[in-house]
Image 1 (cartoon, rainbow, N blue to C red):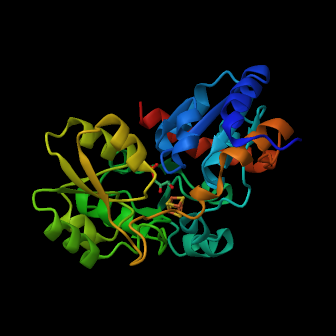
Image 2: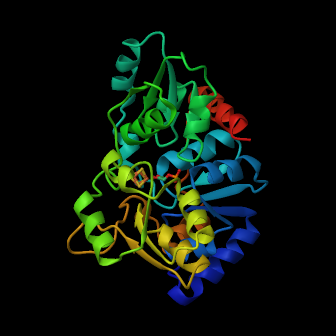
Image 3: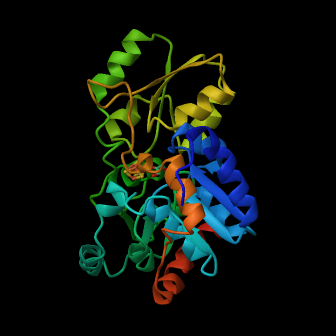
Length: 312
Ligand code: 13P
Ligand code: SF4
């Protein structure tokens, strides 16, 4: 593969995509240039729904490993490419399958609801999957007295417990990007920008969620900024979402809650591993490809399909 000059890379990706009947699906946390070239940009639920109905032969997934695995499970016969196979997720990694298996044994009469941010192995041990946009609906689809383990995000699980009055047993996992968002940084931004609304992703700690004017998945946060009459928003989630917020509401101001004194950003290091160059190389070489055993895919698809049915 020849090196492609940066100014030609978008054009080359688009022509390769047509030639190979490929589709590019991107999460909102991807860099702006990847979001702009994608056929669909969305949150975890939207991406799963798109992946379920695509007619493309090749799916280039611009996001992280557990998301691409979900796409492969939904499309076992298609080629699913991830531009950088190292693009993992601290939340998925916080729930190792062997430890989770042991944990599950302590709660034999509980069902398992797993947040989509987990490995395919964890999905095989789950009764139903949820995302941040449908977690409440999925939990409430079970009777009030149903005993439930919620894995792996303790922050999302705690938030849903508070919302529904349930007492789900929580796996002690978290996202390194959202869990380190600090109250001091939020209060500083609130003081500097009186009248700005705080919007937060439910992967943030409860102390941040308690301060928030609105809580939701990335798509819900984006929709809120479009529909709200407010002109200023303090955004407690990953930086990538600002691209769509600014595009949709150029007259509004957005302030990301920084997690670092030296940078006014909050980047997921895994999401940001994908680049246009790697995406081009993946499409050209048709690798790196997501590969999973048939046994894992056959088991893991059941709780994912159950989620898609419950989300309709
Ligand atoms: P959503 O896409 O459900 O908003 O989740 C955000 C996230 O952290 C993805 O890794
Ligand atoms: Fe995982 Fe957090 Fe990155 Fe999402 S933002 S991919 S949960 S590490």
